[in-house]
Amino acid sequence: MLSLLFVVLDNSILNVAVKTVASPPPVGIGATQSQLEWAVNAYALVFAGLLFTAGLLGDRLGRRRTLLFGTVVFGISSALAAFADSPVELVAYRAVMGFGAAFVMPATLAILMNVFERDEQPRAIGVWVGAVGVAIAVGPVLGGLLLEHFWWGSIFLVNVPVVAVSLVAVALLVPESRDPAPGRVDPGGVALSIVGLVLLVFGIIRGGELADLTEPTVLLPVVGGVLVLVGFVVHERRSPHPALDMAYFRKPVFSAAVGGIALVFFALMGVTFVSVFYLQSVRGFSPLQAGLLLLPLAVTQLLFAPRSRLVVRRFGARTVCAAGLLVVAACLAAFAGFDTGTPVWVVELVLFAQGAGMAHVMPPVTVAVMQALPREKAGSGSAVNNTFRQIGGALGVAVLGSLLSAVYRGRIEGHLGAVPPGERAAAGESVEATLAAARQLGPAGEALVAPAHAAFLAAMHVTALCAACVAALGAAVVAAFLPGRRPAPGGRERAAEGGAREAVPR
Image (cartoon, rainbow, N blue to C red; front, top):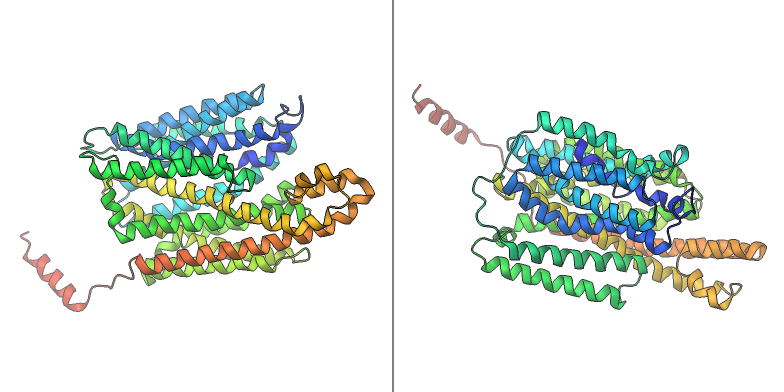
């Protein structure tokens, strides 16, 4: 869990430091907007592209060994990133950090599947899911606290002592495990998976940057990535030694579980992205305050995820996951009622309920994915689980972010008359851009603030309702295909079991 914490946390911690990093030296390193985007996305791109391959290598070479390797790479590159002298260096070190993280995350879940027996795995996976939720929410808060007291590199340097403790603990406590019969290497399948995932994730990230999914720089890599992944599936079905056995996807439980993971992260990451702008740009909270306001999502993951197995045992995975996704859908729809005067306690209550719904969805679907595969293939199962999680989250930010931008642009265009003609297109791209243009106009720009807030709220309402529909679709998928409650053995079965036990020689 300690290894998992810094990997997930680093996905989001840089987001709160972009303004500081963009400042000229000595405060920052003078990064441009494009360089900042690459500093954020280089980590996510390499991480998502190599997750599947790293999981396969863990099964073959040993999960403890790959965990230690990934942790060392992550720690060294974190220290180098903290002292980067230029934006290009920072982007390069962030990519190396993503490389190390790709070997850490699938190994953590695969190790749990081999350390704990089948009846203990749901509780262990609940703790794993809770740790992921805490890391996602704590990242912006920790980043804000560090930036208030130290220089920008502290957000990376803080990883080093945690990595050092993790290395010692893993070396002393974690047992080694691997697939006893991994078979021959499938280099063609591995290469196709890396190329396909990198192209697909790059196109999705690019779509999120541009808030336009029709741009050639978005469509070409996405289409190329999909075609390469189709080639990967065809290759794997024909290969005598596939990197991933496609027969697993014929199991309705497995396919529904990975689909549910992607859909729930699509909805969650998209609306989390929107809520940050709502809290900061419309409500006026600082980055640190906004991060603190999102903490209910983390608290509920910590409280409920490890205990979700008890509810699943009582009602079955199908009922619990469907109900949890419907709660998430209702909370996302509640964002459609938020405005500039919504009490903070109402926002917090909705976020708390949303986190509770998530905490009763992610553990059961993760258990379904991991227990659908043999224990010796735990690395592959973990890689598939995390890859779908990453792609679903990236798609949520890209698609829902594009929808938000399109609706906002349509609502604000008629109010930009005071902005110089050459600057209107840029000023209408986002609420932040409009408010920046208003500040440049001085007193004349004050009239833009209220329309900008109104346009953003209208766009947020549409986006939230679409995210709620996606969560509801996820509820339908898991309700149709996940297993229901397993009936307890009846009296006749207990008697038969007792007779069988008596028949065993002592």
